[in-house]
Image (cartoon, rainbow, N blue to C red):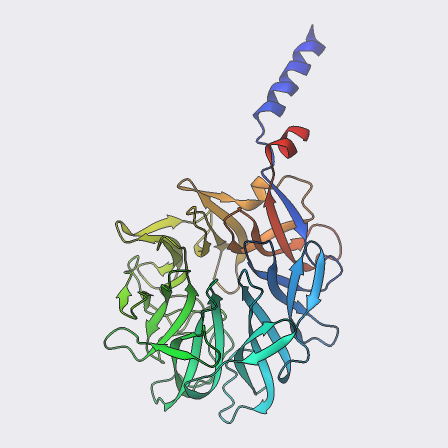
Length: 397
């Protein structure tokens, strides 16, 4: 009888284990370093990959295929793709061949070149206008062809911090504003910051024309990467700006990524982001609604920081939960669903080729894009797409 009892015990244990809910695809299996930054409703992902010469190139990633869209570019070596809509319009930040007269290192590449926002479509890269300054970068794009981001003005601001910022940008000289580009070619619209603030950064726009991002001053607002500022804000489609509140803290320019940031907005107006806690040394992911305000959704067990980087129309949020500092700690990709935060690695099963470090985007079908580290040698960092398993898929396992 003992072997039968053991068999029953093993069967009960197997039944108790949750079945994997996602299948993970390594989108760049032969690459050295890559990240998937966004996935649209068709499963097309944007991203970044390191070329053999060490430069970063903007990429499109789809079903195991990889297309380098950095060429012919605008003359500079580095670029990245950060969003794509249903019509195949891709948002880029890309260096030009011209030196930045202020040597601001606006996009953090360290080359001293100007870095500008652009749109790629059907192989053509079109530079987007600034507000009189030299640089800019992009956030998201909606299905109406409206893109958002940040554009420099011509205003020299003595309050901008000297030297290199903790996130690698700077020294910043000029002010910058949140903007909407389009939908008409060459069109740019400034989004005013909160009263008393002087700069802004737009991170995401929904199909209703609502935008979210940051409002602050040049002295307390960090440009991407590890973007942060004192106020997480929402701009309604009429351009009016609204403070979304905070979790007890404000920006800390001495630490990368510490502040209040609205990263994403869905078509219902629900917002995800990160907000500084009291003491201004850590941030937690939040979900904001007009009815309930800002809700702290916490971190994974044992972690100190988190950020909600994307929210879909079902209200599912993905991002990263970090043990240690935002910029240097150990991250884990998370999915927040039905008021519970899950380590995405617990939902993909042991056959995943990657350990998932950060989830940047989730679409309405539940597909999640981000980056992870290979479990086998050489342990490269690769872009991934995690797709929900169907009921038939789960039954076969």
